[in-house]
Length: 238
Image (cartoon, rainbow, N blue to C red; front, side, top):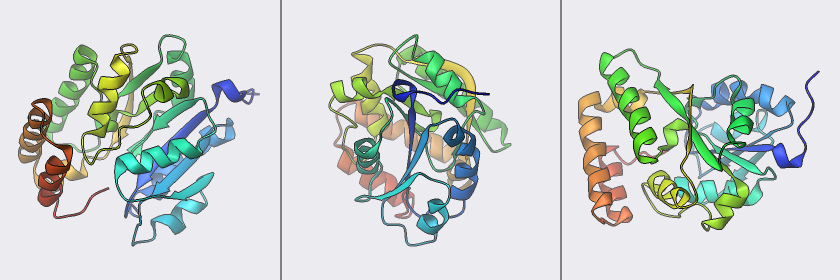
């Protein structure tokens, strides 16, 4: 019989959502074993107009309401979290079945890290995207939200919490955490939906993200980048 983790090994899984009724039940279903192990699941809603909140209630320890915006929702989740390790998970990302054990083992090696990502679609170009994302994070220490970022609460507090900006919050979070130490890059995978790549076109999405990240690296204002990004996304953000 598995021992219920004590407070210093409890993981708080934070999921920011906005209009995610199509995927939230599946994601929360995959997290129920972790709740049984003593970890907590917090869904942070940014004002969904569909059935996301109703569907999330049964599968989460808490559903929190926050201003819309991924970084703001992540911050609200951290404020409510009781665990000493935080896992940020996208609403359309399924965790590795042993994610909790893998994270706790990784925390014996460092203070933050990520999983490898696998995209759900079958387009051969998505395999290239996966490899590049995983390779880039190993080389540069810059991690994206699709990869399931996990971090010790004390390390997150040390950098002032989640950077509250309109876009590229995962990139900025990685930059700040890198000052404390490089990420533990796990080979085990989370499975992230490829829906945005397939809906907008794989090549066009790659080019858009490269342009935005280059602009951010050169000092562009995240608010302006967000306007460009969500215009391309027809104003729908998650």
